[in-house]
Image 1 (cartoon, helix red, strand yellow):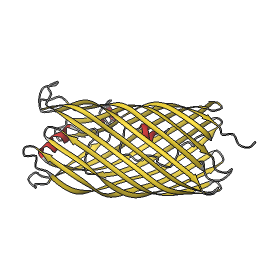
Image 2 (tube, rainbow, N blue to C red):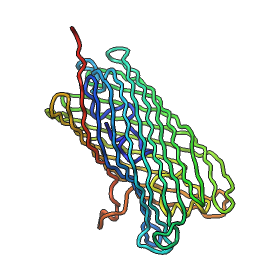
Image 3 (tube, helix red, strand yellow):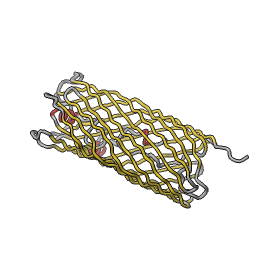
Length: 389
């Protein structure tokens, strides 16, 4: 169980092959729940704040089996492993512009997250394993929007969807106290945004790779990884009044760079990881702002470039042989540059500087925005595999 399936950030990179805390040897099952947020905030030139967030509440279940590497080899990743996890949960969308004015756009809605991940790791020797894995993170919601009217007056309905699918095949080699892995990666990021005044849908395929290294010395573990996927996505857009279709290809990239540290203290394991996640996507379909609703219905095309710093802490305590409790925490800050262009060339190009955080609190927290947060709890039950006669 990790924050990759329990986070509200659909397009942030997940731990497809890597692990923060190694799974217990033998067969195991896990279950947990979490609360998460993803938020975006823009301050308009007239001083109004436009904030939007999505808050899923997950239930996660998983099961699998693992066989540790030979004593002294590698840095904790199992020699052989199979694992399947599912995280499902309802979500709530909220968007508002403050202070309130008749010209404001406000929205609220409900949706769901459906996240899945599987891992298969097969050894060819004590030092080498081939790895295959796949994950899908998906969110959809239906929002009710008030545009330029008094509160609680329905203007239109919006349907959003965001999806990221990852498939990877790689190779891992182990040395005493050290291991390295390389894998090829296929990524499919999709997004759609449909209102009465505009329709956008984007889909396609990105290709890339991942490099990872882990080292272990006594009770300490250090891990680092880098991943990149890029390519071109097909975009279809239309908007009022004529709803003339526009079809074209647009560049997209997804990158992530991680550094993590782990320590074992008695029956407690801790792993702290920092990630720098950077992306370029030709759509916006998660925590959409009121400013963007007006822009899309006017005929603007979005080009989003985000930079997010994520901090993850995972802790595990063994209360009894085969029974562990896990705590997962994530917080993140970042910014996003959204460039809006008009395909007809009539409207001037616009640029929005967006904070990847909400609008809560006061003072410095209000200026920076509140952090995106994930908080999860879980239990892990394991049954060791008996060997020998």
